[in-house]
View 1: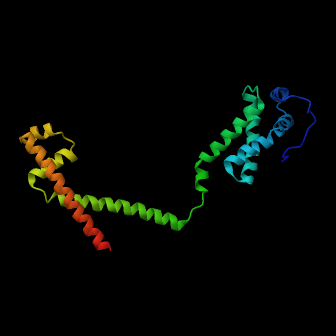
View 2 (view 1 turned 90 degrees about the vertical axis):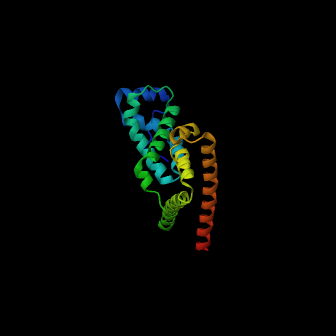
View 3 (view 1 turned 180 degrees about the horizontal axis):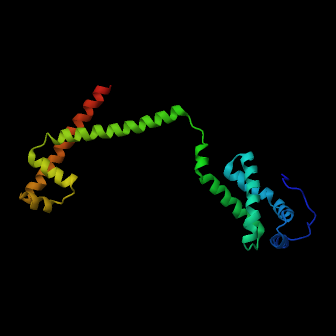
Length: 197
Protein backbone atom coordinates (compact mmCIF):
# COMPACT_ATOMS: atom_id res chain seq x y z
CA UNK A 1 0.00 0.00 0.00
CA UNK A 2 2.64 2.49 -1.04
CA UNK A 3 0.86 5.82 -1.42
CA UNK A 4 4.08 7.81 -1.14
CA UNK A 5 7.33 7.34 -3.01
CA UNK A 6 10.27 5.92 -1.17
CA UNK A 7 13.22 8.11 -0.28
CA UNK A 8 16.65 6.93 0.73
CA UNK A 9 17.15 7.65 4.44
CA UNK A 10 16.36 4.12 5.71
CA UNK A 11 19.35 4.25 8.02
CA UNK A 12 17.78 7.00 10.14
CA UNK A 13 15.69 6.14 13.18
CA UNK A 14 12.12 7.34 13.66
CA UNK A 15 13.33 9.85 16.23
CA UNK A 16 15.92 11.27 13.82
CA UNK A 17 13.34 11.60 11.04
CA UNK A 18 10.89 13.31 13.44
CA UNK A 19 13.64 15.76 14.40
CA UNK A 20 14.60 16.41 10.78
CA UNK A 21 10.98 17.02 9.81
CA UNK A 22 10.46 19.42 12.71
CA UNK A 23 13.55 21.37 11.69
CA UNK A 24 12.91 21.46 7.94
CA UNK A 25 9.19 20.89 7.37
CA UNK A 26 10.22 18.68 4.44
CA UNK A 27 7.23 16.52 3.45
CA UNK A 28 9.51 13.91 1.86
CA UNK A 29 10.98 13.21 5.32
CA UNK A 30 7.50 12.97 6.85
CA UNK A 31 6.46 10.77 3.92
CA UNK A 32 9.29 8.32 4.55
CA UNK A 33 8.54 8.19 8.27
CA UNK A 34 4.83 7.71 7.66
CA UNK A 35 5.38 5.02 5.06
CA UNK A 36 7.00 2.85 7.72
CA UNK A 37 3.68 2.76 9.57
CA UNK A 38 1.10 3.03 6.81
CA UNK A 39 0.15 -0.64 7.14
CA UNK A 40 -0.40 -0.13 10.86
CA UNK A 41 -2.51 3.00 10.27
CA UNK A 42 -4.45 1.25 7.51
CA UNK A 43 -5.17 -1.67 9.86
CA UNK A 44 -6.49 0.70 12.54
CA UNK A 45 -8.71 2.49 10.00
CA UNK A 46 -10.01 -0.75 8.54
CA UNK A 47 -10.89 -1.98 12.03
CA UNK A 48 -13.07 1.10 12.62
CA UNK A 49 -14.51 1.78 9.16
CA UNK A 50 -14.81 -1.83 7.89
CA UNK A 51 -14.55 -0.54 4.29
CA UNK A 52 -11.15 -0.76 2.52
CA UNK A 53 -11.69 2.38 0.40
CA UNK A 54 -12.82 4.45 3.39
CA UNK A 55 -9.80 3.16 5.33
CA UNK A 56 -7.43 4.17 2.48
CA UNK A 57 -8.95 7.66 2.37
CA UNK A 58 -8.47 7.93 6.12
CA UNK A 59 -4.79 6.93 5.80
CA UNK A 60 -4.26 9.91 3.49
CA UNK A 61 -6.27 12.27 5.71
CA UNK A 62 -4.19 11.22 8.71
CA UNK A 63 -1.00 11.98 6.76
CA UNK A 64 -2.37 15.48 6.12
CA UNK A 65 -3.08 15.85 9.85
CA UNK A 66 0.49 14.85 10.67
CA UNK A 67 1.87 17.71 8.56
CA UNK A 68 0.89 20.14 11.33
CA UNK A 69 0.44 17.87 14.37
CA UNK A 70 3.93 16.40 14.32
CA UNK A 71 5.49 19.88 14.41
CA UNK A 72 3.41 20.84 17.48
CA UNK A 73 3.89 17.73 19.62
CA UNK A 74 6.86 16.22 21.39
CA UNK A 75 6.90 12.67 20.09
CA UNK A 76 9.23 10.14 21.69
CA UNK A 77 7.67 6.97 20.24
CA UNK A 78 6.37 7.74 16.75
CA UNK A 79 4.83 4.30 16.24
CA UNK A 80 2.67 4.55 19.39
CA UNK A 81 1.84 8.18 18.75
CA UNK A 82 0.73 7.67 15.14
CA UNK A 83 -1.37 4.68 16.23
CA UNK A 84 -3.20 6.94 18.72
CA UNK A 85 -3.62 9.71 16.13
CA UNK A 86 -5.15 7.18 13.72
CA UNK A 87 -7.51 5.83 16.37
CA UNK A 88 -8.62 9.33 17.37
CA UNK A 89 -9.15 10.29 13.73
CA UNK A 90 -11.37 7.27 13.14
CA UNK A 91 -13.42 7.85 16.28
CA UNK A 92 -13.95 11.52 15.39
CA UNK A 93 -15.05 10.60 11.88
CA UNK A 94 -17.52 8.05 13.20
CA UNK A 95 -19.00 10.63 15.58
CA UNK A 96 -19.59 13.36 12.99
CA UNK A 97 -23.25 13.96 12.01
CA UNK A 98 -22.51 13.59 8.28
CA UNK A 99 -21.53 9.98 8.88
CA UNK A 100 -24.75 9.34 10.67
CA UNK A 101 -26.63 10.55 7.58
CA UNK A 102 -24.89 8.06 5.28
CA UNK A 103 -26.38 5.03 7.00
CA UNK A 104 -28.74 3.19 4.69
CA UNK A 105 -32.18 2.35 5.98
CA UNK A 106 -35.22 0.53 4.79
CA UNK A 107 -38.08 3.02 4.50
CA UNK A 108 -40.66 0.32 5.22
CA UNK A 109 -38.92 -0.66 8.44
CA UNK A 110 -38.65 2.99 9.47
CA UNK A 111 -42.35 3.44 8.79
CA UNK A 112 -43.16 0.36 10.84
CA UNK A 113 -41.01 1.53 13.75
CA UNK A 114 -42.68 4.93 13.60
CA UNK A 115 -46.08 3.29 13.61
CA UNK A 116 -45.12 1.14 16.58
CA UNK A 117 -43.91 4.25 18.41
CA UNK A 118 -47.13 6.08 17.55
CA UNK A 119 -49.15 3.06 18.63
CA UNK A 120 -47.34 3.12 21.97
CA UNK A 121 -48.32 6.76 22.47
CA UNK A 122 -51.91 6.08 21.48
CA UNK A 123 -52.03 3.10 23.84
CA UNK A 124 -50.81 5.31 26.68
CA UNK A 125 -53.46 7.91 25.86
CA UNK A 126 -56.09 5.17 25.78
CA UNK A 127 -54.79 3.91 29.12
CA UNK A 128 -55.09 7.39 30.65
CA UNK A 129 -58.64 7.71 29.34
CA UNK A 130 -59.53 4.36 30.90
CA UNK A 131 -57.93 5.45 34.16
CA UNK A 132 -59.89 8.69 34.13
CA UNK A 133 -63.13 6.82 33.41
CA UNK A 134 -62.43 4.31 36.17
CA UNK A 135 -61.63 7.08 38.64
CA UNK A 136 -65.11 8.38 37.91
CA UNK A 137 -66.64 5.07 39.10
CA UNK A 138 -65.17 5.44 42.62
CA UNK A 139 -66.97 7.06 45.52
CA UNK A 140 -66.05 10.73 46.02
CA UNK A 141 -64.07 9.85 49.18
CA UNK A 142 -62.09 7.17 47.34
CA UNK A 143 -61.49 9.49 44.36
CA UNK A 144 -60.18 12.24 46.60
CA UNK A 145 -57.89 9.90 48.56
CA UNK A 146 -56.53 8.24 45.39
CA UNK A 147 -55.85 11.59 43.68
CA UNK A 148 -54.09 13.00 46.74
CA UNK A 149 -52.03 9.86 47.37
CA UNK A 150 -51.07 8.79 43.81
CA UNK A 151 -51.33 11.92 41.68
CA UNK A 152 -50.18 14.54 44.19
CA UNK A 153 -47.82 12.24 46.09
CA UNK A 154 -49.15 13.09 49.55
CA UNK A 155 -48.61 10.72 52.49
CA UNK A 156 -51.40 9.38 54.73
CA UNK A 157 -50.77 12.02 57.43
CA UNK A 158 -50.95 14.89 54.91
CA UNK A 159 -54.23 13.51 53.54
CA UNK A 160 -55.60 13.20 57.09
CA UNK A 161 -54.65 16.82 57.71
CA UNK A 162 -56.06 18.07 54.40
CA UNK A 163 -59.36 16.14 54.49
CA UNK A 164 -60.03 16.06 58.22
CA UNK A 165 -60.65 12.28 57.99
CA UNK A 166 -59.38 9.64 60.41
CA UNK A 167 -56.11 7.90 59.49
CA UNK A 168 -57.89 4.51 59.22
CA UNK A 169 -60.55 6.01 56.97
CA UNK A 170 -57.90 7.44 54.64
CA UNK A 171 -56.13 4.09 54.49
CA UNK A 172 -59.43 2.34 53.77
CA UNK A 173 -60.37 4.81 50.99
CA UNK A 174 -56.97 4.34 49.33
CA UNK A 175 -56.96 0.54 49.61
CA UNK A 176 -60.58 0.13 48.45
CA UNK A 177 -60.17 2.77 45.76
CA UNK A 178 -57.04 1.06 44.43
CA UNK A 179 -58.77 -2.35 44.38
CA UNK A 180 -61.82 -0.89 42.59
CA UNK A 181 -59.60 0.94 40.10
CA UNK A 182 -57.66 -2.23 39.34
CA UNK A 183 -60.86 -4.18 38.79
CA UNK A 184 -62.31 -1.47 36.53
CA UNK A 185 -59.07 -1.21 34.49
CA UNK A 186 -58.94 -4.99 34.00
CA UNK A 187 -62.53 -4.97 32.72
CA UNK A 188 -61.71 -2.11 30.34
CA UNK A 189 -58.60 -3.92 29.06
CA UNK A 190 -60.51 -7.14 28.39
CA UNK A 191 -63.28 -5.16 26.64
CA UNK A 192 -60.66 -3.57 24.32
CA UNK A 193 -59.06 -6.95 23.60
CA UNK A 194 -62.48 -8.43 22.78
CA UNK A 195 -63.24 -5.54 20.40
CA UNK A 196 -59.92 -6.00 18.60
CA UNK A 197 -60.31 -9.76 18.14
